[in-house]
Image (cartoon, rainbow, N blue to C red; front, side, top):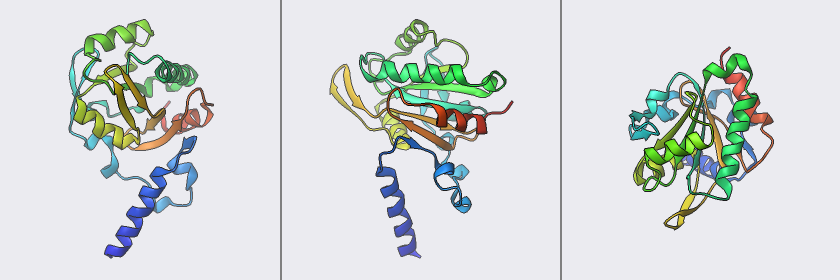
Length: 202
């Protein structure tokens, strides 16, 4: 039994290391119905505390009930992050009108020291992302690192206001289980929107 579990774990790690443009668990292995994610893999099991751009303390479980589209950025970024923000806005615009009320868009800062709730709020207003469907989250270094590992996002501080990081947008179902990932900048959002349309309720 131990050898079987070791083999499964090894295959999972190897699969996680592969870089692909789009990662969709259900579409890549449609025949593997017995290996679909379970509630044990929900991000809502994480008990860390976050602060929103409004300064409210929340847990990820407080986001339960809607389809979540998530990305990790930092507000002082001048290169990749503006394009990730544009991709998030583009996705939001293309979601069908009858599904918009079932969507929630989350931007998590990888720079919690500088991205205070006040700064996140100003960023949200500047980018016209201050509606109820948008939420910005500030954690601490430990909670951000933990969450980045869950999303397979790698980041590294280069200077006090500069990070190198992965460019991944993730889609979670109503129970907080990862359903789809889009990797890259300015890529075709077709498969991401298809995943959203499958998950979101009318």
